[in-house]
Image (cartoon, rainbow, N blue to C red; front, side, top):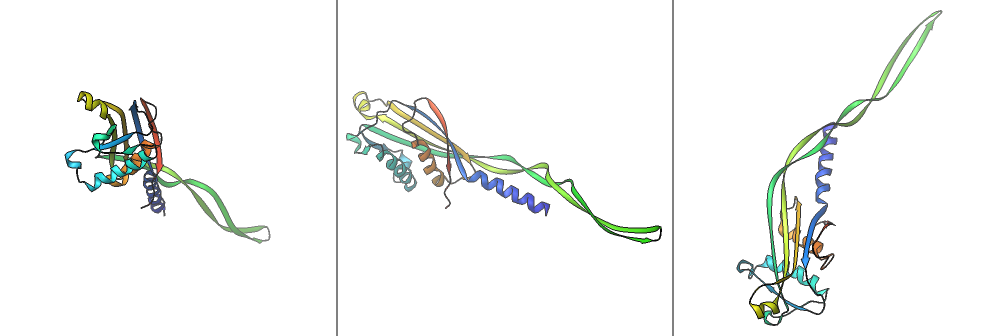
Length: 213
């Protein structure tokens, strides 16, 4: 019974960690919102990638909400570049061990028999144990670090000076037990655009519930 209680607590602890995704968002920008145009820039290994297209679509949907429209690269005012990745490491986590901590109450049942001036008594005492945390133990798990970066370059400045000049740099990082980047990136994008473009030079924490698959 005690082992079963401890197992339930471990399951609850682990599932509770994966029910929410917490991200850290850092932003630097000189971005002017409005009816601006943009085009995506892609690395060689991003060309033709279905995964990359999925992430672009997530960003594309958010940008449309702020009045930015996609255009051919030669006509765009901003050139947008996205990068993403994931790393992992083994970490030790602790959980409580539940056990008997003492006696919470005692109840006695019995009977008495008398014979003149003498008598006998027989009875049974039932003890109710109390339970609580009696220690801790650890387990090893894989923790993943996920990141998503979004950068806007001034396309007009590049056309004139042939130098890249960024006007927006958004960085999102998150740690958790989910190692599938395609599941996590939409949440990272959502965290980034909850306050867009945000206060330049600021870092904020965003917590989002993970929708069941």
